[in-house]
Length: 363
Image (cartoon, rainbow, N blue to C red):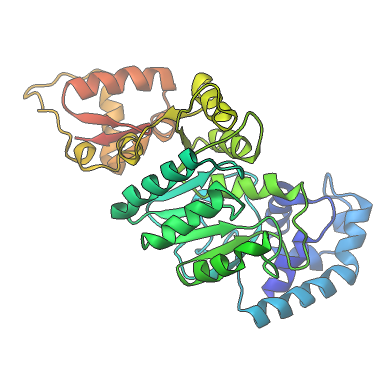
C-alpha cells in the first residue's frame, strides 16, 4: 500500500521535504526507498546511519499504520506530491510538503486563489477592510485561503462563507483538533464550503515552529497574498516574505503611521515588498482579473518590422498565448532585462500586451 510508505517517509527524522523528494527520485519511488537494501542506502550521499536505521526499523511503518486508521475513520484525503489532485501551485515550490491531509470539497487547483492574512489583534478598520474586500471578490468565484487564526484569518473565512465563496483553512497541527478551539464551529462549516488542509499528522500540536511551515503552504497555494493589518513583526509578514520568494504577488492596505497594526503593512509598501491597494478592484486590475484588462487592446500596425529577438519572442508566445515574464525569459533563452525592453516595443506595435502581475499575452 503506497500510502503506508508515503506517510512513512515524512516520519524519517532529519529528512525534510526537499531531501525526501530527492530520495524518492533516487530510489525510483517511495516504496522502493523502504525496500532498498541497507548496503545500498549507505551509499546514498547525505543519508546518515540513524536515518537508515529508522527506514529499516519497524517503528515508522507502525506509526504510519496508526495514521491510516485515523485517516479512514475521519474520512481524510491524503494527497501525495505526485498526485494530480496536489495543489499545482504548491508543486512548483521547492519545499512544498511531500504529503498533505485534506478534509473538504473545494478544488485545491481553482483558477483564482487569494490568501488573506493579518494580525490576531484586528481593529475595526481592518475588519471593515477585510469584509468589503471579500465581498467585492465574490463575482470572481475565487478560493480564499487563510490560517484560521484569531483576527483577520477568522474574519476572512467567515466573510468568504457569507459571500458563497469556498475557503480553505491551513492548520499548523493535525486534523484531529481545531486551534483555536473557538473556531471549531467555523471549521465544520468550512468543510462543507471549502476545506481544512495540513501537512501535519494527527497528534501533532500547534507548536510555535509549525506556524512558519503552515504559512509557506498558504503562500505557495495562492496566486496573490493580501496582508490586511500587521504589526512590525508577525506571521503575516512571514507569509508575505515567503510569497515574494515564491514569486507570488503580494498586496496590502496602507494605514496611519501612528497605528501599530499598520506598521507592518506600511513597511511592506515602503520596501517594495507589496503593492498598495485601496479596493478589491485594485487587486483585480493588477492581477489581470478585471474586464478592463481582458478587453484591453492596442490596434495592430499593418506592416510591422521585427528584429530577431522580437521574432523569437513572438514565436514562443504563439505557442503559449500567455506567459509570465520569468517563463518567457526561460523559453526564449533571453535575459529578463532584454525581455522587458522587447515586450514593451512589441506592445507599442500592437502585437502583445503586458498585463499586471508580470504576464505577457498575445494581442
